[in-house]
Amino acid sequence: MNKIYITTPIFYVNDLPHIGHAYTTVICDAIARFNYLDDKKVLFTTGTDEHGLKVEKAAKDKNKEPIDFVDEVSLNFKNLSKKLDIKNTDFIRTTENRHKISASFFWNELIKKNQIYKGNYKGWYSVKDESFYQEKELEKKGDTFVTNDGSPVEWVEEESYFFKLSNWESKLLTFYEKNPKFILPQSRMNEVKSFVKSGLKDLSVSRTSFNWGIKIPNSKEHIMYVWIDALTNYLTSIGYPEIKDDKMPYWENCIHIIGKDILKFHAVYWPAMLMAIDFPLPKSIFAHGWWTNEGKKISKSLGNTIDPNEIIDRFGLDQFKYFLLREVPLGNDGDFSENSLVGRINSDLSNNLGNLIQRVTKFLYKNFNNSIPYGFEEEKNITDIQRKGYKLIFTVKEKMYKFEISKSLEEIFAYIDELNKFVDASEPWKSFKIDSKKAGRDLSILIECFRIIGIILQPYIPDAAKKILDILNVKNSDRYFKNLSLKFSLQKNHSLNNPDQLFPRYEK
Ligand code: MSP
Image 1 (cartoon, protein in one colour):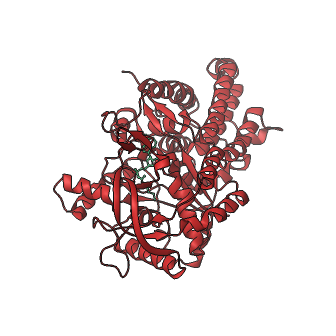
Image 2 (image 1 turned 90 degrees about the horizontal axis):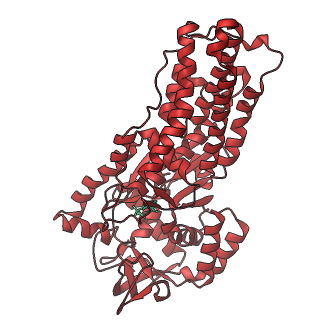
């Protein structure tokens, strides 16, 4: 599989970008960059979900026409992608023509396959989640109901088209059995299975009480349920309904990264609809956890949302990315606190990584004319520390391809610890005075190990990794994982660029 397709959820534009949006995006970016460096062809899409009642209401609150409103606010998300320096290959807006064509075609396919019928919907709806709820999924509050996060639902009664979701119950369960890695982590698969086993009702897939959405083909009153509209974005981005042959392998190796709150839509509705039109399913869906802020649930009403722009301006982009990727295992919930962020910056990035690189490269700059003093051709065997470095990529790949991003970083930083110990034990600054050849050899070994970590760190902290590789003067074409062997090591007399600080300590 040398083609891979990574997707973020598309974001509701009624909100300002917050840490949740940044988190999903940063994860996808790290995975996309990782695959790219591992010689894969990568498609990586993100974008904005611009239809539905929630967005229509937000536009009304601002006294704006929905289209003017979404044109304006979708920019916040485009800007966030820029600010995060995301390597997405597409940014899709559901108000684009290409998407309207794709979603309408998808709808017609469902009609063709006799998967849709007209009826009346009577039941609960959450505008916040844009989701229909059965009473058994809600909690009673006074004489009404709320969703499990305490948000209100409203009673809806209107004519609606329905998708025959109930027909897909056993087919979904069989599919999950045959594809145990379709939903990850495993705990989420179990959750989905029990949801499906508890019984699926047909899904209302159109609305008539408001207008802001894609018109149902051949209908005046109905607009498409925003989740059907939104989910098809993943197909639109690869050219649906006319997907070129060379794009299909991307789809078959597609990974949807989502938050745990939107699992039902991706892991139940979406595969059922794809099966219903005889379309292949994506490879897997990974649901990540949620962040709290200093131990408290994040919510607009509490006023404790975290603006990623502000964090990046204060602490730095790589610092923010590193924290998000390292702090909690992907899939678990995490707590965002300034203390833990600063702790990670100062101990891992500044002390362990930054100081190490700086100490060694500065010493070479001052004492060895800023060039590599020793050639490995003089060696019979490579040293242990180097061998471990070349092996590191295999462990890191193993973790990354299992979505164990924080563990992969743990492995890399454990290796950086070893490099620090190597420096402390060899003390080139002292040995230089008595045996400059030994000092030169030790420093050259370290430089080779820095080349290794510089290459491996690129997906996680791209700016700092680039800085390391620039200081080492590594050619751009030699910065791939396939270059992680002795064969590509920097040769004796190779000149370095001037040292530079990587991560200043964060002081309040
Ligand atoms: N528009 C839908 C997705 C449609 S995809 C076909 C949507 N948008 S959203 O803007 O509300 O949410 C985007 C993502 O942010 C979701 O994956 C959600 O899980 C994530 N997060 C929102 N708050 C979050 C945290 N506090 N922590 C981590 N991620 C959270 O849902």
